[in-house]
Image (tube, rainbow, N blue to C red; front, top):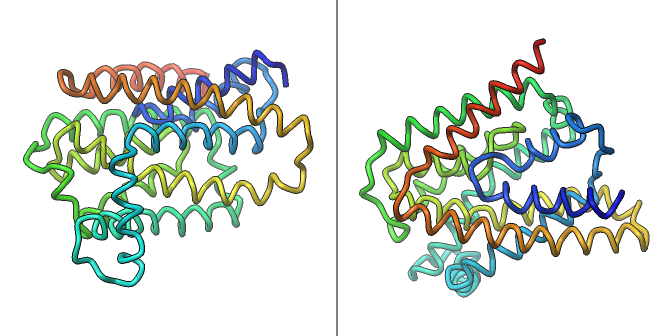
Length: 267
């Protein structure tokens, strides 16, 4: 893979991972619409590591609290806010881990990687985000997040296994449906991404390790760095903008891209 494509993939992943516009959809579309070679699983894992680093750094105070509460959460003692946060993150991740493992084992995850599927999910879930964002109340804050809402948002997150859905987009949709403010809903969605990215990265790594070599490791390191920088920039920008604007600009982008993809798929 050329250095240009490596950096391009990393930047696309970094920008789209946390914006509600689907990173997986864009990474699948890149080789299909440009004729470039598919970047492969190793680079996918590398750019996910980069974006993981960005979200951990940006939300370090929340991550630190969850880590402090993890020992108590694992023993079922939920008598502190950090322990409840850690347990909520665990509970919210379980449905996606189970569904993801099933899709990976059955090969269905590859069967859904088509332009038509991405077009429909980009369009449909974009409009759903708009509906929930406009109609949802803004009465809950991140401190109100408990096990019930974690289960509900975890089930919403399962839909992100369909390419083009957007993990951040669908979990933000779930948060807005539950009545969380835009900023706090996005904050919860970003925190949910950490164990999810860890789980998916671990699963993909099993397929990558046997094919790893020095050049692949070097390419992966470059991709991870650029993905980290792009993700940190995109995440910072989105969280600042949510103080003054809605998710409508992202919805408009999704609708336009979805319509274009459906035209391409069915023409």
